[in-house]
Image (cartoon, rainbow, N blue to C red; front, top):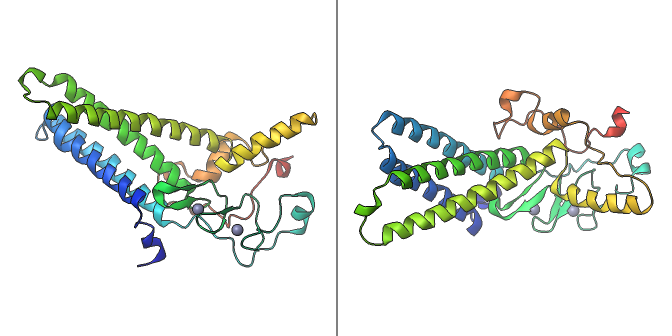
Length: 270
Ligand SMILES: [Zn+2]
Ligand SMILES: [Zn+2]
């Protein structure tokens, strides 16, 4: 099996896959079936739409797992201008190679990752330059699917004739499902909101934390700190999701990405 294929052989990745399958099956064949019936036109329409979002979630999830987050090219040498005035420009003390701006060493992957955001256990991969878009789009589709499943579930609960239900096992299943799907929706919505914030500011999760430290240090010496890669909300979005709005929601449309070793900064514009 290829190295990329091997990423699937991890308990968290299989757990995410099982959770998606479980939520999909329950939403369609238990709750939607009970609420509208799968033969009626509203039932068929909802089954189609829910299947569409579930498939898009699954496809983006596989993209996150399979797309390499980004190696530092072996030919990379920092340009002289940059290395002179940027103290951050240094060699990685573990890989011994040069680190381009925004690159970080991942201890789990045991290598340097271009524009590293974080190492994600659930995809058994780093989220970096090349798969950040897939990751963001996955969170978006997963959020929509999860909220959609919650709506189907709640509609089913309200129209169900509970008096005719005997025993407790079905009720326990409903309570368990409700807890999972509402908890998941809140978690995903929070994660989605957080990454919208990061994209609007052209920041990675690592840079957000580094920025907080830099701001604090700057404040102590009476200066101010601005994140150097934040070149305006719309430009920030197009740098990450691409210039063509129609391709923003396709996890694999990354033809706008360059080498990932240099990035426009506020200094370029001034
Ligand atoms: Zn390294
Ligand atoms: Zn990693």
